[in-house]
Length: 95
Image (tube, rainbow, N blue to C red; front, top):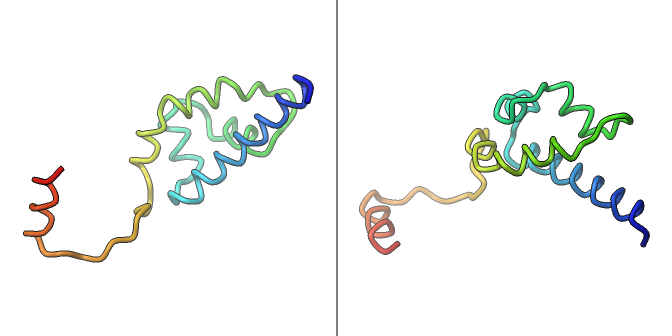
């Protein structure tokens, strides 16, 4: 694979990751754009692979702010059953 193919593959993988991030954590592009400090329209153009945009700085901001982005999630990632408060306290002590 030459460097052009490798770059195209990396860009596509990053687009896929962004799409999964938004989907899994029930985020809007507006939510994500606010966290990373870029416009929603720019984020959308990167996500949809529009020409004339260098996506690397966008992906760098996404990586840098990933914990903050996940904190904005609209739903929990893990599905857990409710448990007694005492059990939560025990788990907290054990960690």
